[in-house]
Amino acid sequence: MKIFPKDIASLFAIAVLLIAASCGGPAEAEKPAAVAEAGPASPTEPPKGFQPPTEPSPAIPDLQAELLDSRGKTTTSPLGNFDFRNFTYPLPRGWHHPDGEEITLEDGKLAPKLRDITDEMSPEEKAEARAERRIGMSYVTTKYLDVDNDGEDEAAVVVKIETGGNAIPQLVYIFGWKDGKPELQWNFRTGDRADGGLKDIRAENGELVVELYGQDRFLLGQTETGKITGDEEQLCCPTHFTRTFYKWNGKNFQLQRKRLTFEVENPAAPPIENLGDIMNDPVKAKKYLEGR
Image (tube, rainbow, N blue to C red; front, side, top):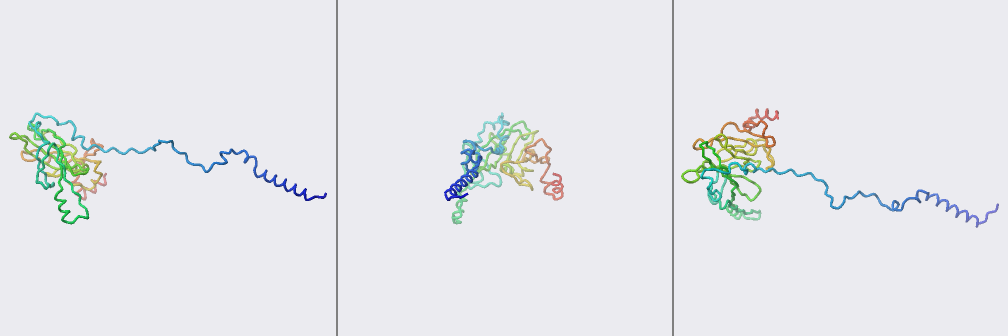
């Protein structure tokens, strides 16, 4: 059969149409337009106002709760009517004040004097700034306690040293009543929060009971003892406290019996006795640490 150029052209056109139809296919033709035009899948966005869950921050314990509770707030002693908010207090050993060895409260306060010291200052300017610095003081509370077993209450006055920061070192003054006025029997300083800070003060069986935060922290004269090995922790959150007992001998309060270190979270657990003595002895310390 004779094929003309016109027929060749027609056959070529049909072939092109068949190839195009086979490439499209039924599946391609039936794909929804929304799917065909969509880009890469994106992650689901949270609704507006959504806040991702967060772990709650642990609560900072109130380290002054026992000190400020209702115990020992009333008395029949004349000390109960004395104004300790407007009074002059001697400073215990270790605290210095450019105005002398005493601090006078007015309406329960004495503001600190703060002076910044910078590297740009001359040595003379730094010395002058240091000389102008002064600690402040604020009244905290008074507890009325019979600490010498004579049937009459003494006053345990607690004041806070104001340093201009978050620290809360405190001073404690034990007063009796004599000749129509308070008579100082003992004053001492405590540390800052977990570092020997004051937890509680009370009277039991004719003795003065003092509790300080930290392991084997007790009082020597007018100061509290220093840290022992392994007693470094966050100031905000003490894990231990020490209970000690003091008896009035007519002139001084003397430490009695053993010093007891308790766990803050489990105060009913048996305490550790005289822990500092253990940790200061290499043999005892090794045995103690291995048994923990």
